[in-house]
Image (cartoon, rainbow, N blue to C red; front, side, top):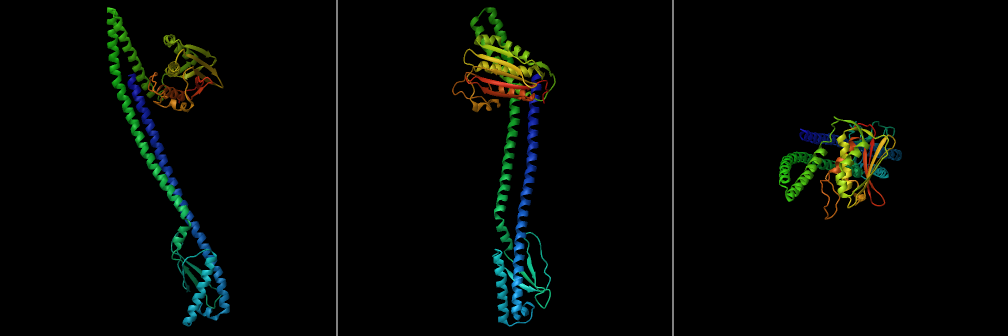
Length: 429
């Protein structure tokens, strides 16, 4: 039942992780839509501002042209007659059209507008469309200059829209490239998310199947080996007994690895069974449980349990796992004559627990990676230390569950120190 519950915890953990990622993906999608809307809105505003700037220049040019036309009307009666729509000789009419064209063109060039245009003299009301990139004719009233009222110059630019777009080409291209980049990035991220989601589900299924497949044969091997050991003890077969002890030892190691995977998957938010734990007492008990192993390795352990307040609310099993995993690593990674120093102290309502060894050390570039699941520091072709790389991952997950932190550092002698800081009497999240 315990193992079944642990599998349920792992499935629950995977489900919660997938749900969080789905929510994050949805928020990201809506954020991208907002960014897209802002970008498009920004482009239209830039186009509107450029159109207003263009219109302002045209109006200024026509206002200046009106002044020159006023001067021409005073000096030439033929200009007055032409503008008022009276009959003029063909050559005079052509001359006045060219003169008006010259006046308008010169004033447009002053405003840095070098576009082809058409103009006419009219006394009718012209309906103007004031939409972005819409057709528009520009009017300049000649009231007060002529004997006839409501005479206007109507000016149109066939290439007006192309000119305005050319002015904002850089802004438009930047916005377009940004939108395309964001869209492509989102779809790539979405594809990776789906792939990770599938891998997470597959990992869950794999662990459940692996645990199921391992548990039955491990139990059968242990049962058969125990029967064989009893038989060997009865017939006093020392060689057979030695072989059976090897089988039981390896069976225990394999069972321990399976247990590590199960414990890693079962550290979900199950707060049942929490109690007040004395960390100093837990450390002492765990070290005592390693007594036979430390004696065989000729290991020396120093305890400096100086924390006056070492009580923490939580699961006894969790804190035993923390201490036993760190202590086990200290023994495994010390080549010979391990010397391990374990200490506790208080600092500002926090418990600081540290364990130092005289082992092979850990390169600084691996300090962050060693807490990743399945990660093991490369030791070349040497494989003296066995394991799945789950111990420190399990420790880190439990420490963070209790709102604590774990760090790794080294002394000048390259001795490795793991330091855990836990709030006192603080419940887990």
